[in-house]
Structures are given as structure tokens and as C-alpha cells.
Length: 194
Length: 239
Image (cartoon, rainbow over all chains, first blue to last red; front, side, top):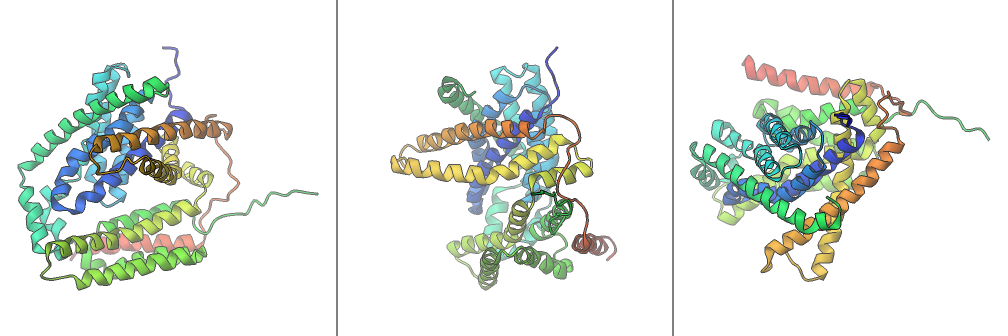
């Protein structure tokens, strides 16, 4: 291949822009998490809403490493804003897997993109690790929400929910990615942006 | 007329110190590591961002944030026992505010006072690769832009009568998301053109007019952060 395969400043700036958009949307959606049921449903809503910018981002990706950087940064942002470091670890690994999947589709095939999005979105699921594996420490800092809230959340989240949430997350990622490609086709391809 | 470049300009804190402080704050204030054991450090870390704002003469922002913090802290301690459902949701929101606000203030301070070139130079000094520093600096530059754009789009859509939570909620989401992404991607093109003219793409070492070095205040804050971690380590592993 004669094409220059190193990431240049333009690619890196694109990564930064789409990370910012995804993070803002994530943040807006996650604000609803104070209601116990919504906290569980975040795993549904976050993948669906971030699907549109993410699919747009994938049209800009042509070189190895861009998805990986985006996911690492999203994980790092999650960590700084008070989730756990699990998001960073899971995000990095899933970013790498997504990168390989999308690369196998030559950075253009539609379904590879959707599956790559679904896989990379599991950092959202990683945020729940704190509740599953370290429940006592998690709730010791939240004691003053009242026992009702704690009971509501732990009642919704027994340990077997962990793999279920993963499946839900990936399924919603696929739905979100699919909606993303639809919207991309409807608006951006016509307008010549994508 | 002679124009002389002042080579000795440098900001109050080094970007590296600011990042260390942000990290410490997110571990101990948001993450609440150590809990009661870290009591003193917790309060120092909570009020330090406000102090930094005052040093930068941001009186208004500092006073507002401290008022919000103190108000929500006391309201939260008042709402302790025997809560109804609405009260507990309220207490939860106040609790989240008291957790996150100090770090938000700190992040705002960092974004406001750090020049992008200064940040890039400091990171370059630490041998962090460009592949991470350029996206990070773009993210920091872009947060206010995204917020501003989405506010403008929201207003426009409200004028057209496309409200959130109306009958066609999918339409409401689509009509907000699509213009947002379109305008952001156009702004991004301009941004990368600007970066090109500043020579981000050359691949050589860039020079920086800002003097990047640790001053006395940097050492004080670094000592504070390191002490936090050591004290936490003592409490965690030896007691």
C-alpha cells in the first residue's frame, strides 16, 4: 500500500471531536441515572443514542488505531467523572477488538462497523462492575440515600444480571449502530458530509 | 519600535501539576477512597479548587460554586433519615452534586487557565505520545462548543415546535442529533486546517513561547497529592 498509514493531525482531531460529542451525549443520558430503574436502563439508552455520532465517526476512520484511541479516551473520561477504572480497562480491550473487526471489513463494510460499535460500547456495561463485585464498598458511600434506594438497586442487580446486561448492551449496540447507519444514509450521505 | 518577546511568561501552575491534582481529586473526592481515614485531605481537596479560582481572580465563579457546595452539603446532611421517595431522589441528586462539584470546578479551572500549546509542550516533555495529547486537547476545546451548538439547535427546534417528550420523540432526537453532528464535523474541518497552519502535522519538535517549569506552588501541590496517596496507602495496608 502506498497510502500513508500513520495517523496525522487531521485524524487525531477527528478522534477528539467525536469523543467529545459521544461524551456529551453519554453525560446527558446518564443524568437520568438517579432514578433506580433508569440506572439499569442506561445500558439500553447510552448505546442507542451514541450510535449516530459513532457511525459518523466510523466513516472517517481509515487507519489503524483511531477506534482504540476513542475508546481509551472514553474510558478515561468515565474514570475521571467518577465511575470506576473498570471502564478504562474494558474500554481499551474492547476498542482493540472493535478495531480488528472493523479492519477485517476493510474499514468500509457496513455490518463490520455495526458489530464493531456494539463491541466497543461495552465500556458502558463495565460501569456496573462496582455494584456486582464490590457491592458493600459501593453502597457504604451511598448509605444516606436511604435503605429503600439500596434495596431497589440491589434487588434489580443480582450477580446473574451481569452477563444479561452484557448481552443487552451488545444487542442495543447493534440496534444503535443500525439506526446510526440509517440516519447516516438519510442525512449525511445525501449532503455529502459522510 | 522594538518588539521584544518576553520569554519568561509562565502560568501560575504547571499543566502537569494540574493533571496530577485532577487525578488525585477524582480518586479521593469523587471515588471517595479511604473515606473517614482521609477526612482532612478530603476537605483540603474540596476547597482547593475554589482557592485556585480566587487566585486567578475569578471571584464570582468561586463564590457561586462555594455557595452551591455548602448549600447542597448541608441540605444533604439534613435529609438523612426516614425519607419519602421524592426526598430520597432529591438527597441523591444533592449527594451527587457534593461528590462531583469540586472536581468539576477544578476541571473548569484547568480548561480556563491552560493554553493548548502549553499543554502540548508539557505533555511532550513527559514523552506522552501525540496520538493521545492531540485528541485530549481537542476534547477540552470542544466541550464548550458542543454545549453551545446544542443549545442553539435546541432553541431552533423549540421554535419549530419539536419538543422533547412530545408525541414523536424519535423525531425530536433525530432533529437534534443530526444538525449537531453536521455542524460539529464542519467545525472540525476548520479546526484541522488551523492545526495544519500551526504545524501540528510536521512531526518535528515544536517550540513553545510559554515557559514550562515547576515553581514553588507546583511543589507545594505535588507534595500535597503525594502525601494524600501515601497517607491512603498507610491506612489501607498497614492499619
